Length: 171
Image 1: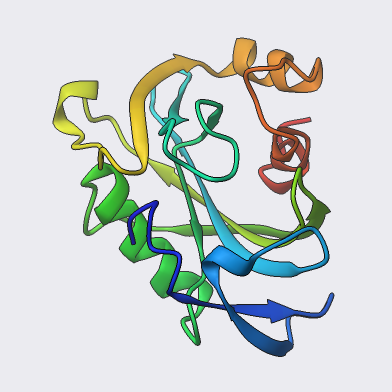
Image 2 (image 1 turned 90 degrees about the horizontal axis):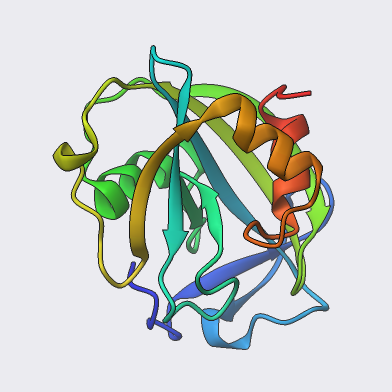
């Protein structure tokens, strides 16, 4: 989905992921917890693919995140959301998504019950097709340096950067 679709339904969940109610995306606020996916993509050269979020995004505009993040819509499950978002946001399809950890964490607005997935991909950066409504740009970055920046709570990364360290066994 695009960054501006405030009408789509998002399930508000408890800490175990049980749906409490559904609200429109535009109504999400600090009192709610909702499900998301995070996809961490590495290549064989010791690099990680990062996404700079579109400046049009409501949450974390312009910040650097893992390669793909997406809200689980309506009654979708984590895996189908991850498959859809990877193709929509960066143009990567028919890829093996390896489940990582699921974490509950407090974000800058609301809380997230996030399911992580890992991917190994050796595409050159020009092969990806970023979705302009979602992604400002993509970059391959040195994994070790990126992990150190996240550990140091570098301001280019959202609060979620701390959760990714655990989700993807980076520490």
